[in-house]
Length: 165
Image 1 (cartoon, rainbow, N blue to C red):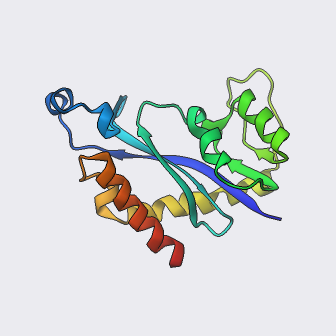
Image 2 (image 1 turned 60 degrees about the horizontal axis):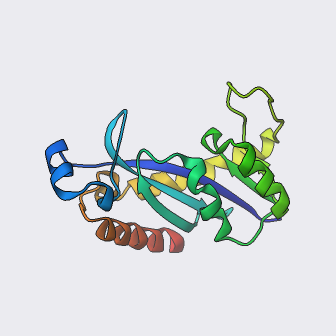
Image 3 (image 1 turned 90 degrees about the horizontal axis):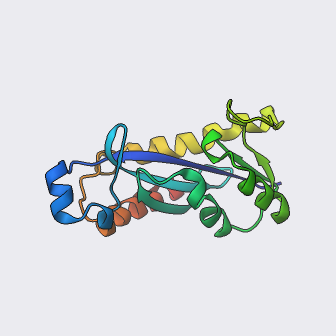
């Protein structure tokens, strides 16, 4: 039985507001959020915590908007473990059609509270540990690269090292 995990994390940007307007922040994958200007890395990993799919978006893009795109890149699995940020009816229905059981806890504000397998959900720490390994790379954690292409290449290099370690 194969299991995949899906999650996202944010990396802070060193851009100031004036630099962002001047240099086109959206083209560099930087968005404004409550915490300031940042970038979000969406990832799908396997049961061993190895990154399989990586997608970079501005920090103000919601997780559910790119979830299907990330998950589509992987072959169907028995379960998909994800956090509350991925709780949407459309994603749940799409996963069921695909033959994957969604193991996603419902948000507190949801009118219909779905059941999920709590024992399987405990395995979500695998993807959190993968993100911790990414954040061990100072260049990625603080987003030194202003160009999105350079930043994504640094992430790809880190993912390659993480895959083999």
